[in-house]
Image (cartoon, rainbow, N blue to C red):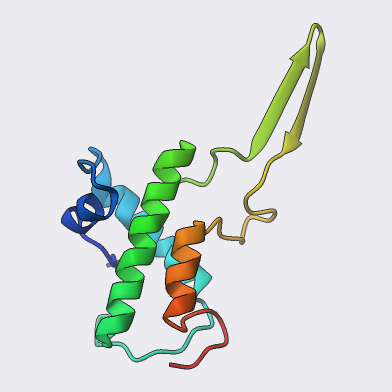
Length: 129
């Protein structure tokens, strides 16, 4: 079973807004994004793979909530497909170009606030906790 680092109640407290209908899926996807961003981080976990240090638990929670908040603000549905391409049409001419965000499929479009929460906790790749 995948690890999910925040609850719907924690997301509601973070955003100050009611959780969306598909909150469980969004939290699971955001937790995967955080896991991918921390692929080389080293920290103590319990048998379920959850961080054991309370400060790290809070950083994971905050990062996941920030990631969902960011995805909702950018119109992403958790798939990573939103805002990948921009289009401009002038009469019969149509141009499209890649937008910001990940440039390769393996990259994670991590929310700035999620990045800061993980950096403050010393969890960025290569950091040993």
